[in-house]
Image (cartoon, rainbow, N blue to C red; front, side):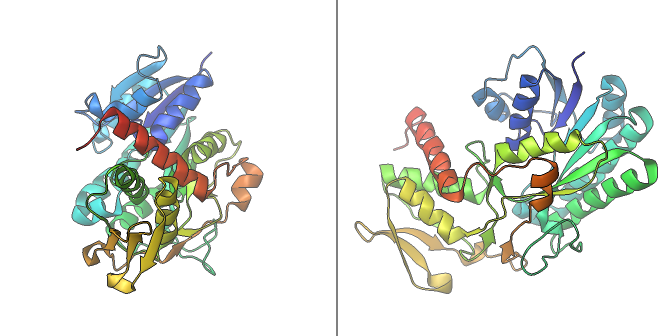
Length: 345
């Protein structure tokens, strides 16, 4: 008998890859989507060739609605629940903190309560974040202290601690994937890696306006999304649920990633200046192609977010199949394909 799986946030990067992997494993997948979804919002599922699959069922589900969560869990009786639906942008959460709390924090509680009462045997996996941990010697593992330095972290800290509470006090088999940055050709346009890759591909085609970035020194642990998604499935299969850091274990600065992406597009960069005046020029002709915008500098940005994936590698089989340079090549190649389909003046 096929496993019944509910994936919230199924139209996102991780959700789409997860739906693909689950369908390939023979599962019946209920893809939770924000009500009001349209054809355009399903572009990732379409690119993966999943739309129309007989075992993929699209489901309008607003996790902010407790009654809707209860009805969905009671009706579907999922054996696994992957909760990925969230406000995933720090910038968006800063602009509307109450929406972030409702979607990320309270929405998680709605699902946990529904599982507790109507599907207590279900395996639950939450997409948590490195943003809620205090690094130790510049590295985050599962034992690091928790804190929230901005509204996005507040919302995710609520979700993370609620999951722990329901596991410890109600016996739910619920584990958190403590996700670090993970990229792919399906990354959303609001994320800095996609912005850089798109700008590099456009500049290589027709140099126009320079790309504006914030803190070039910020270092992030850039992993590959399909590797992280495979770890989510492994987490759900554990005999006893727990929380795991899902990361590559290596870091690159935004400056380094931009250099790699532009190089992948055939554009060598020459960095000049410092601080807010730092910029990159196309080394072939000296034209400015990247500048710093002080408005994009966030006061509470962590300077370094590096994860220790030792435990996940040992117990979940987490892999790191694509390094940062290869990741930049993948993202730029995807943007070039998009430009070929939709050329811009």
